[in-house]
Length: 248
Image 1 (cartoon, one colour):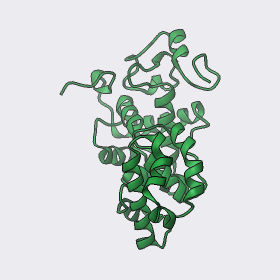
Image 2 (cartoon, one colour):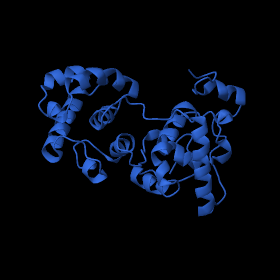
Image 3 (cartoon, rainbow, N blue to C red):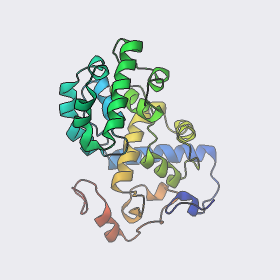
Image 4 (tube, one colour):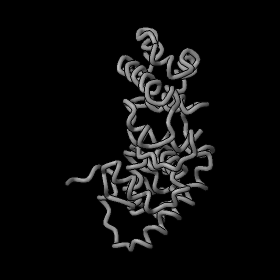
């Protein structure tokens, strides 16, 4: 199989024992905690239902756009019953800026109905109950469990998957397999925080097309170090860390 541009598969690396991999993964997590002390869920919410709705809406759009839309949405639909009984045209109009607004409106109405019918309108705090809801997969469930209920979970999105492969933690592509492998490397209590740190690092430093290797704090722990921009000055201009030349 031809590796995708910039992926770890394009870089040769020496065999590594299981113990060495676990130690490297945990050290990387600690270093990322220093680099991204502000790493968190970037969706605005105050309740588990709001986070569940926002996460469902974030598919194929940005967190910024979701956050611009949800204040009106949350005010108009304060509970699961409100979504279940929503007027489709009114809901679609609120969701229009997000794209795929008709499908998303149907999804929220179905989600609200399922919550009312199965859980008395409350968002369940168990994985098996969450993934049984319409439109909710493991990624969404782990976001809700980790950030609304404090239950550790790994959110394997595009950034997470790309980074753990580049770091050389796994070669798996399937999100469930990635979740299983990474879950065995890092302490369970760190799963949610690690997810946020990897996602922030993917957005700010380890970009999909050309990572800023020369300005990466974990380059010495990365199996793919050197595949991107290696000049420290040029790399520093690329990064989007707060206070960095390329950041905000």
